Image (tube, rainbow, N blue to C red):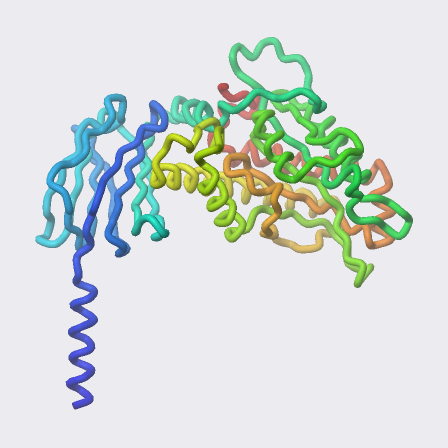
Length: 407
């Protein structure tokens, strides 16, 4: 009897596993001239897929295991899409093969989005041209066409009359706290807000001297700026990177010391994504100049998810580069990049890091942070980490020699 029960359980499990996945809908989007995006909607069951390209003629093949197409007609790609036609056929009796006839050779990447309250599993397939220079320019048009800067903030920059339609890479430097919010206070009365503002100006000066880069200060005096306003200002300045500066404190143990680098945590990213989606009807310029207010829920979620994924990946690289350089300056509190839900790190379209420059509650570290020479070393370490990031990881860069990107 026991053997019979085990056998029956196996048969039932196998039958559940053999249940086909239904492809409910296929949507084709054209975010830029050099990119096409497919979103495949399934009936709540994860799907195993394989993607590869073919030549003569150019084709993209998508194999979906144990999948059935739940519609008779396939969508027509947009006129300017990289895809000419989409066709499908059964394969090995139970699998589905989709073939996309292409206009040009492409490179692809894909990932699966988990179900939410509105949709089941979604397979997102990004199709980009192999012309990386043009593709990068197209992405910058999408990710950098933002609001012009409002007045009232200090911009550290220098004339560059030979850009010919290009602009410098913009680094937004956020000195934490300010005004009625002094932040942490050391034993000698040193206020965090003053230390980080002085350090922010040092960093801005270093950036201003680098060809192809310029800095904007989120605050340039002793006044308070709301946390989400800091993100808004960075976006208005068309920032390509956001760096928030702080000085840590741990009064319970004044021996604690060292710098740290933070980026947004996954939980924080999910919370922010939910917030942006909830406010999409009244919001504009949410993801690099692309408003979500006129997009349906699925497209808005996919666009925002793609933007956040890309931003978190970039934030990881820049945080690691900065932390590596800070290790050369002095002691670090933690040897790895930390993740936390800080509001100032929650921009969906600007790579963002927060640097704790030291523990102001530690008497020795407070004394060092009061010294201009030490603050310069900290600023130089952050600056060199930023330079390393743009040189090695910024996929949209044209050339490190000029560090200029298309508008």
